[in-house]
Image (cartoon, rainbow, N blue to C red; front, side, top):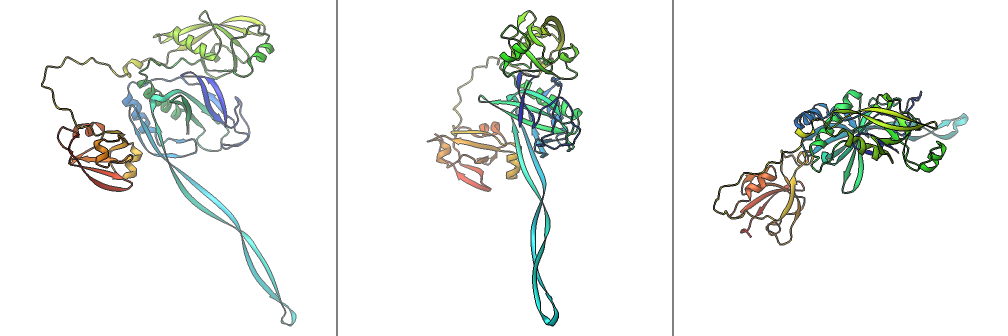
Length: 419
């Protein structure tokens, strides 16, 4: 697949847009992977929803209106402020052709027998389902793009791609929809959950709708008779974008924005963000080199972060606690754990539970023979539905018994005295 770099919401980033990239249309129909497949960027800047509850409701309401990149149709979705789990199913029809031989003979004059062999091609058809689970952390979303495949044979010609960052690595998760009116609210819902997790000062950058030239810049500057060694060369402008409305076009070189020098697309993104600040919109002054002349251009940009404050976690300083007698510490089980995802709970036939991720050496959990991968269901008869329930069950005293789900079996583990 071909990757393209677009200056879009979030940052300038790589968006996987298909086998062949173009801003035009092709007359012939195509399917994913065909050489005549055409992708078309759709201008998009997030519009944040009023709350994370609204975003979660939108994902749950629309989860049957889209498919993953391979065509997997969501059959179940669990969304929260911090996690989205999607269970999909890919249904495929496969045709197999094989040669089926046949034998016989012909009885001729005088009873002579002449054998012959023949056969024919026979086609069989098989149906198969391939389940696939998608697990997404909204806080890892760095950017979102919208696109369309106008000559795609399949119904789902529109979609959106999420750029994810995890531990220094970047990846992409793409979805396809039947209409752009489905793609936009879904993208806005994911953007809202991402913004709700921006606890490190991050914000979405305003989008101008520009694809920047990134390859062999020295020769590009020379071709355009630009004497300087920096500046953003516009490769393409997305329709209905602020850049298109301002008249920016292919081969324009943006070398100054808001009076500050422009070195590349990310520098324009930062200047635009700083220029807007908390304002809902503004007119950003650019200086552009075009056809041997420098011209002023003014671009109207809007702020994609309007309303973000009400989505961020509220940090409230705790009130001074009244002096109380020190209570004994709760049991230290000695595990790393997390809540089950919806897909994991469904697989085990459970409503909820806690997954043991790791067991500390020499810990109480190791003495009880708890293992990594166990689903913790009960402690001392108290049902464990989530991490908070597990902490509450580990009260001072003794741990008599624990119930776990392990590889399809429910086991009872005897406890030991507290450590």
